[in-house]
Length: 118
Image 1 (cartoon, helix red, strand yellow):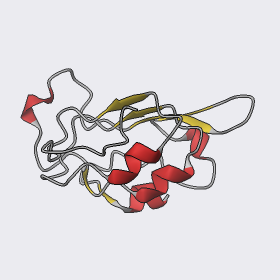
Image 2 (cartoon, one colour; image 1 turned 135 degrees about the vertical axis):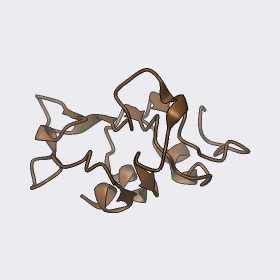
Image 3 (tube, one colour; image 1 turned 90 degrees about the vertical axis):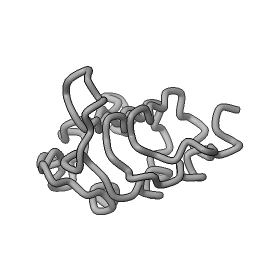
């Protein structure tokens, strides 16, 4: 819920993110064996056309709380509007992350965490 709290959600896209059972929330996939979150897909729009992102998509900040998802392998935040914010350094410390999609997020792509991709 702290991840949701850091985001601006004008379309109420995260309306299913209520209660303690995060595995039932839209965009969240958990391991049936362990119950750990391994996939988080929080895209702004459902179409393939991300070129028309507006202020109605998710925004705000990418929460440091993501590091608590130690088994997270897949993170997709594409097609959202983070309004020129820098890519968070902590993403580079998420050792199990294998897929990261930050395309069309309006993030500042001038630099990226040096640990990302190693």
